[in-house]
Amino acid sequence: VSAYSSFARTVGLPFEQHKRRLDGGTNEPLFTSVTRDFVGTLDYIFYTADSLVVDSLLELLDEESLRKDTALPSPGWSSDHIALLAGFRCCKSKSRH
Image 1 (cartoon, rainbow, N blue to C red):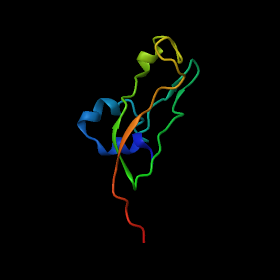
Image 2: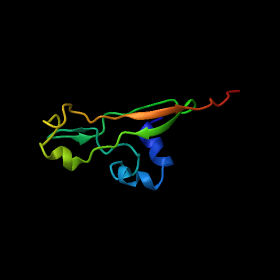
Image 3: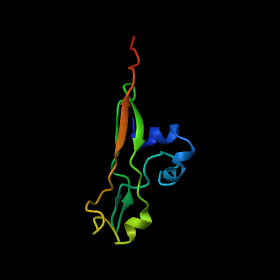
């Protein structure tokens, strides 16, 4: 499953500012790449939900701050993709019969 999508569904109010940077239908980042002609999501973090739980996520950037220099890469952001990062903790595996 997707780390950003699953975390967004389980976290409450402290996550509200972050949720504004997610697609309301999918709970995925609104974008992970910003160019002059494209703004969209190309990158995801997938994990196995029966053995891991998402503990934390790197805060997503807002488009306005990235557009200061028109697009990515820029003097402030060296890649044409924003960084995604998730912290996980192990959980007991669900037994399979």
